[in-house]
Length: 462
Image (cartoon, rainbow, N blue to C red; front, side):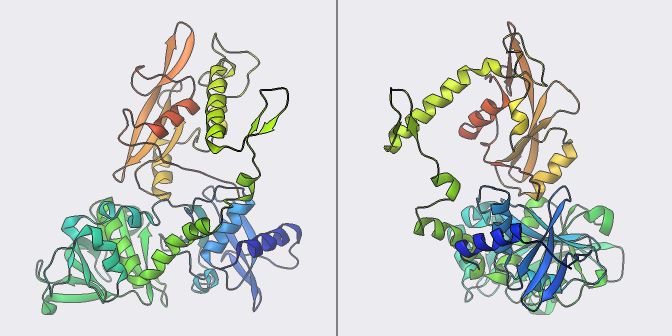
């Protein structure tokens, strides 16, 4: 892991030094020397950027590099993904993993890519284990026949001397066949097993499927279409030494919560305490240094109300001034545009920009299916959201929001009040002069929604 100062210096060098005599092909990486290489990283719209990196660079280093390059807020949700198109699978590359080691396992002519995007669910199981591990799927090992206490669940996974167990029904694709069959599965530290006799956990009835010291867990991108699975909640275990489709251990759950439970438990069994260290490391750095970021600390609160300007040093006074400034700005909302760029009767004709169009949470012409896919990619946890144009009614907008691992869509309707245009989610009971005000309100208040707006889906250009 590079120190922040070294990473910034390295990034400056990358931006000013041209690449000479190197070409990045379909495999997304080229070795320049024993200590350096060039990798290509993609984002959601499949634009890409090639960068020269040290061979010992980690996934977190790559994420920090692109966060700095794009001036993003580093909320620790930015993630590097391994995307294997020829197999139809994808996984999160853990922050501590060596990127070059991941790339070394790719075939020469395979369509394999690195993707950079948000994943709000990456470490959410440390904050809300109940959302990831339902009671009926988690217990102690069969030797003790005890039921796990959820308050101690994560610690049990991290402690190598304990024996938590995940169990339940999954669909499995039979080796060498197109058919899928339902079995009772058991996940332990020693590996993944299925029972050949109902729900029996007796050793003579458990058959070994896979272990994780030389394998990784992936999600299936189109389980029904590509693999013929009974549902789209597919995942698999892939050996790091073998990469052909017939070597994949293909599995399928009946719902998203079940799949999330199995995949999360497999990550914890494979990496254990290292995952927790990945989770707490950024927070420890924030506590160790009062400097949050260069951009944040270059801002100073100022008071220009008197004859002379002054720096506001009292944090409480600075916050009060900021709130008053925001309210004053809201009162000038007559300068804003109506829903699709046409000034309303109370709006200035000089305005020619709908301000919500520039917000990172607004995704304009995104379809319902595309919104569902984007939210799923960036993490199915409570509060992940985006706003978009309605395809069925061009005069309205839609709020797409994740709650309890399900994505719901809420129509935002325009409300005309004596020539003034407002927006509402609840048939006009709560009105907002624009979409920015609406989003800010529901970030603080749940209102008619199932949860507050917490994490917006963001797309960036590399």
